[in-house]
Length: 211
Image 1 (cartoon, rainbow, N blue to C red):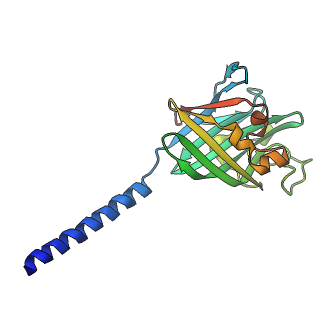
Image 2 (image 1 turned 120 degrees about the vertical axis):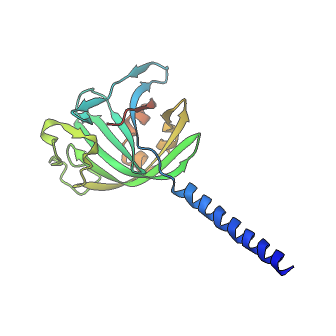
Image 3 (image 1 turned 90 degrees about the vertical axis):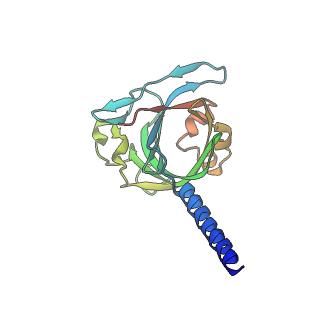
């Protein structure tokens, strides 16, 4: 009888240990390195334009006016999520990036947020404390170019941004309605996606080869 009880106890402890290990593995599983590009924009009348990403040697790059539209990359690298952006204004071009915190990531949606933007090109953002009559002196700024993986962190400013993407057919669609509900982009008339979302465009992302 004692031996039977001992065997049952050993089996229960073993089962609990295995379950804990399984749960821990699921929680710490690495996400494959992936990069998405904003390849398509559609108007309310469903008039769509497609764009191609730009490469500079062995990296993806953003150029000020090539093409002359806002561009975005979503990069998943070493299990960290980043958004890299280019915004074109009448006053000039701003580029930057943000490391994102994942709120939700399932088969239907990817939701992530940040409260810190790193600017890499253009005049200092007026939300920050820099003099917006001067340029952010990042690498290649004189060439009006930013290499995606430079992650220049010499200048940053605080601004909350929450991004909701709808997953469909291995693509990501930005939910602009949800984005514009956030107080920071709406009240400051700015944000990584403020311009395209205020124009009520649909922004589609597709996966592109990792370099």
